[in-house]
Amino acid sequence: MTIRKILVPVSGHYAVSDPQSLDASALAAGFALSRRFTAGVDVLYVSEPPSTEGTIWAGWLPDYGMDALFAAIERQAGVRYQHAEASYNVALETVGKPQRKSAKFIERIGNVSDTVGAYGRLADLIVIANSEAYWREASRPVLDAALRRTARPIFVVPPGQTDAPCRHIAIAWNDTAASARGVMGALPFLKGADQVEILCCEAADDYALQDSSAALSAYLRLHGIDADVHHLVGSAWRAHDAILSKALDLKCDLLCLGGVTHTRAHNLIYGSLTEAVLKEPRIPALIVP
Image 1 (spheres, rainbow, N blue to C red):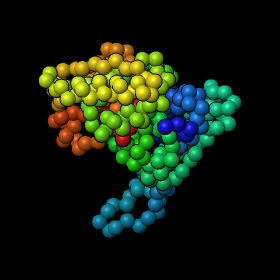
Image 2 (image 1 turned 90 degrees about the horizontal axis):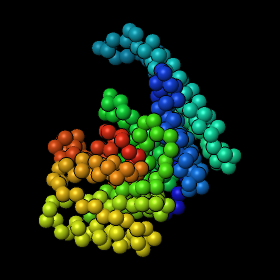
Image 3 (image 1 turned 30 degrees about the horizontal axis):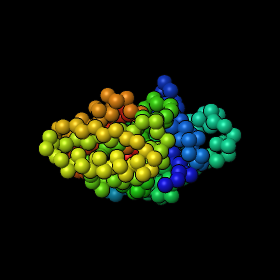
């Protein structure tokens, strides 16, 4: 797979102390990856359709204050757009002329999930900044749209990170179709890495997974990629904790995995590597849905 087009959806959400803080990580990583792959960057800002100010509400629904509320929401949306555009312009000043010529800022009005899905499906890579703020994680409309509606690799950047070296890469492997998708989506990154680790978490007597990880290592060698295999012994219920901890212990700068979305009940009982990476953004992750 060749990466020629990178999509960076921005939200315009901001911290009062640093108006460009929440989109800056995604923009910095997006432009860093565009240099690495000689790819163009499309920065997408989506705003919801205008409100229905002045609408006559149903008789049982109180309408007092609704017009003022909608007006305030629209004012805030305008502020977010200004911050998103300002963040893009600041990031653009740090890159060379060829990158500036291939970069675009796109504003669209519509449903966030539908719009991100439509643009994401026609990109080779999507770059999104994660948030440490727990109260923002429940909806995560941009991340959810990318995971569920694009079938494209998603580079998720922890907050505050301003580069994307991708030189020491870990692969989460459990011999499933999802982990195979993760490997295929990661090949452009793996070919440029200095060191690659294959991380498997299994029961002590799970010889089948040991055999498949060795086969994966042999497969990667066909692509000119040397990888070390690490077998982590543990419960399948908490494999995500073991893999994430090992990647951090090895000081990897990217974790590659196949993205799998589960119900909240499943995540609560069994856990999920995808959710663990998104909930505690301690390492950049390439998630391939």
